[in-house]
Length: 418
Image (tube, rainbow, N blue to C red; front, top):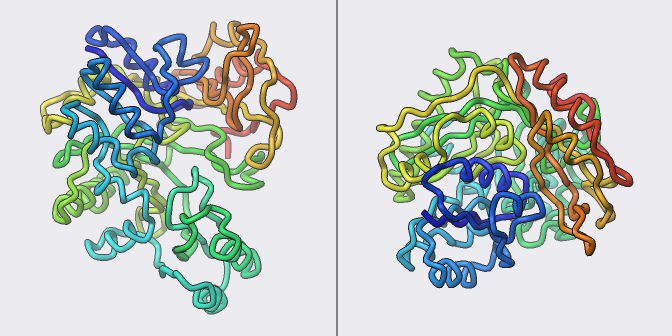
């Protein structure tokens, strides 16, 4: 089969790496891809958000299957457009991808169908949002309604911090139109766990649980990022918790979307808080998480293309998905200054040595004029290693990461330990 993956980050590298292992994939393409993806797939220079050009290329080059990975093209309806062109595509249609594209929609869905989540209110007027913050006090959470590259959430520890976040979103348009509506919710307390799940519109199969580290610096300090590292499985996600999540959150979410005429086919990302009152939804995403995908797919034993096709065909319940034992950890190596301003174009050394004991997924890389790999983003690499135990997987990932260097490289030293 000729397969196209849409996207160009660490998540897409992991997806391409796994698909390349399928004997059924005869040709693999990725648009736009990156320097690492180019080692396992043919990169095509089309922006991930250019729906028209992507569909045209897929038709012209007779793609058998398209996997749309990032949130933006899903929200823009790329899967709908592929299907309209007669091309089988993996990912939710736009009317189901709205569970991530609009936090206001997803919160109202949870309220309507009694899916446990934080108490919240939605605002389109600055004055009312500020008044609510003063009424509720801190800590409190402020979220931009729309897509914001994983950075549109502020956990404010003071009223002043929350007010600043709301002003930046609604008044300064920090996230453009995504922040014109804000969701303000109670700050839930407890361990945070991510569960990604394959879904075929009716059936749902959870992947291994994982934990992501969003803050930029050690000790969970500093600004929120797209993710500085992740590991799986999570020790906090016990069989008892998993059972409650399936009954109270996962299956009710799939049923709710079906009832609303928005059947979900693809990957649902459940961001969960394990509170003293039980598991609650922090957020939904409509796709694989990044960097959680890197360790999770490293643990997958089943052919990924088989799973993708089962989701599209509605036959997920007939597939037996297998996972490796042990654990996996991904350390994100980032550009100095990320998630704020940073420089690009620095040559990267040590990739070959690191690759001997770990899988190095490329997130923000490009090929320099001399053919060497250079930095080309905030999050640059995800060094991912396996181990018989979680501490072993963490140690293996850090040992491999030590081989890699570039100017102003930055990474957290406590992934999986806090």
